[in-house]
Length: 146
Length: 416
Image (cartoon, rainbow over all chains, first blue to last red; front, side, top):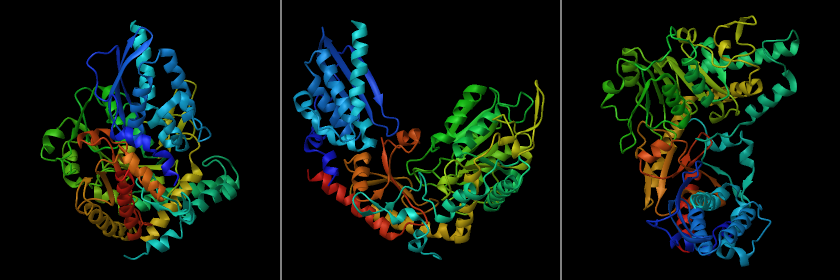
């Protein structure tokens, strides 16, 4: 069933056991993003150490896709340099916009390749990108403070 | 029940197609938009094929035929609502109708009866769709008037215990929905209308979720303005209706300016045509108006009483079957009393978006999210719900498919 390409094991695992969920008390930037069409919400904290992503913590409510995606992101981008993280983010965004034509590079995206199936469901792409857009916003704000 | 929904379905060509690898279409999203019968599709395309011309202009046969068809549709709407022809304004939908009113109210200058100031009050309810909240909220900001509202009780009814404290003598407008698009609740209008009229306020009724599903008569309801969208009433998109009492429309300032709505124009000034034309600037959505006429003819031929009865029976069945599922929580009234055939619910740990996605894989179309009524879903303490809404083409088989789909989703997500 096509549905299985959307609900990969990895996604449901992250949904049930989210990583880095729970906001850290200290951070360089905090953002709150919502998906106005469905009401999903994510608050995300970023702390930087020089050009390194030192901490990503988040809290949120939403569907399995939005919550798993931010969980995967928080694991994947942690400890990366900002430019490495940008590369991954761009790669992921491209995958989401591929309408099912790309499988994703697991050397770059690791667990996030499980999201490839989402690109076949136009209504869910925003769910998958919610946390990533929040991260992007937070890093810009954190860098502005440095 | 005087009609068979399976026979009705044969009038709607969309039910001949299949969904997601050959599944039967189980369409439970009529609260968002309804499907269209052949007679509506044909009336709309036939207008383009045979009669297309700009109405109310042009000295030729096509313009005459187009005007007849367009004005004929207005007569049908008047009959459908129990109003008079001059009280029917075509808009592009209920959202435009409500914006038209809210903007017109602030377009008339200080001596206009609709003009609001900081000493006036606008009353809405907590269960309004965004379309009947934001235009009034923003009018309040523009005019300085105070916005206040009736709250919703935990069982999904309007709390009318403070009726006279909320509709105060300085209240000018009471805008509310006839039936909630989320809860299904049908609001008790009589008491609200009586109090509003006692203090000289006008009552604006959003009938989007009621007019397609039950007999609605503006005289019996005794409201002052009423709106509904064509596309929720088996009609085309891009067409809606604003009905207003003749004596109010006569003083209602225009909102959109342009062709058709004028009486006389100079380079520095203009005067307005009488209603309804004053409120229909530009070349209107003619084919869609004609399609709406065909839609309302279709509904009236089946009979609004029978449609209402059908939905009451089927809605009871839906509520009963949903409540048999452990972990499923309905929001809104639990019994089929003063409510329509729409059910919003949450289900265990499965997010509505995921439930909706699973149901879709089974050919079942539902709505998920906050249903454009964010303040209401916040009040109810739910982030989002899944909504099934029924119409004349649904039957028990559709409800059974939904129940089976919900249990299937539990297995699909729960076992993994």
